Image (cartoon, rainbow, N blue to C red; front, side, top):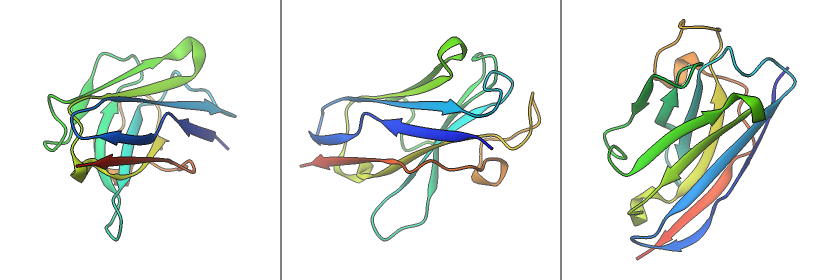
Length: 126
């Protein structure tokens, strides 16, 4: 069973930046793709970004493309999400999750990820 701890959220003004971190434990980290998802207030959880197990492949939702960068440090069992030019519509609880299957057996959508962490709140004021 994998445990995930997200951090780095907070209150920021529109146009600001945040760097989210997610530390994983309890299971081999390096062999699995990792994803970031978010759940805006009153809405369903949605895909934000994902990164392959080696860090070479990255995918982004259209809503954050060009403003977010996902990266990982396998030596630290950590995945990051650098967010810039934040908008009020980015306000959400952000969760990380590992792919259910190791290697390249995944796709950048929620159905391929599980074991959600508690999340970290990001609030962007206008």
